[in-house]
Amino acid sequence: AKRSKVTIVGSGNWGSVAAKLVASNALKLDSFHDEVRMWVYEETLPNGKKLTDVINRENENVKYLPGIKLGKNVVADPDLVHAVEGADMLVFVTPHQFVEGICKRLVGKLGKDVEAISLIKGMEVKREGPRMISSVISDQLGINCCVLMGANIANEIAEGKFSEATVGYRYDRAVAAKWVQLFTTPYFSVTPVQDVEGVELCGTLKNVVAIAAGFVDGLEMGNNTKAAIMRIGLREMKRFSKLLFPSVKDTTFFESCGVADLITTCLGGRNRRVAEAFAKNRGERSFDVLEAEMLHGQKLQGVSTASELYEVLSDRGWLEMFPLFATVHEISTGRLPPSAIVEYDGNSLEVA
Ligand code: NAD
Ligand code: 13P
Image (cartoon, protein in one colour):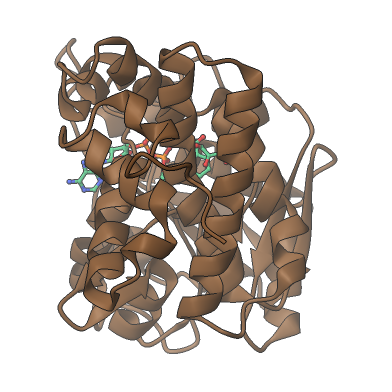
């Protein structure tokens, strides 16, 4: 049988770890071509060298995943169209704000049987309403797109520490099984779930809850408060997901993409860390400034997702049903102080 060729579209912190996972399986399994291409958004490093050249020479993404070898069969390519040429399987893993532009450049460049998967946590909001990133990919490119989400802090997986993930698929169980096969390793356990929207909304919305968790850390409010934020946040995640897509399943929230990702991101994620710094500075230094200073080119998703979410909530008259989501946006834009995270119009955050 023909071996599938895989290209990773993206090469940030998680993108590089995804390349490493996939590359180890591509070498081992007969159903995949050995070489895994990885599209790199080219940049020049402080020493004057191109990131792509350094990745190919040292087999390491020295900027976004230093200290980790990717596998010799990973080939970095700065030319997006060349990187996807002849690919059968595309793994999309960039910060969500860049997806639309990337897809535009890929229109008409893909084979018709190409399958995609999105590891991207985020959504897009236009005048017509919200669209999940997997839909942006499948609508723009006319291809099927699964999702992979989970409690997956990239640096921990890079070191081979055990974690789980969830693949969300729409119709085709065999396609989901192929993605599960491509990603599963002894330390990365992947479960398929027939609920693309539920899986993707979990991954997307928990970033907003993680910003709230960071605020309570910055205010040194302790573990009970943080647990309360996680619980209230999970309820809003579930309520919003089901309002947007009534097909979303309750059980999805108990998969790795749901409660487990919420917990790990609220404990150890970048959204949490930068939001903690924001609250410690009483909001006097903006998220953009803190992101640039603390993350060295990596990107936060929670702040823009909170803003996108706020737009949807205001448009639909849902703001009062989602006090935690709404308050995160109001704090991150400076309209409310960080302490407002445990207040809402003077009342508690709880909405029956
Ligand atoms: P990242 O945060 O490391 O982002 C940096 C990447 O963005 C770099 O590859 C950079 O080259 C690229 N970039 C910068 N400007 C660009 C532009 N104009 N066009 C295209 N690319 C540009 O990225 P990441 O950690 O790989 O995250 C990608 C997605 O995966 C996000 O949605 C994130 O939420 C999700 N995710 C991340 C983690 C994690 O632990 N890092 C875990 C699970 C999911
Ligand atoms: P952060 O972007 O907050 O680091 O979250 C990473 C993540 O999505 C873990 O699953």
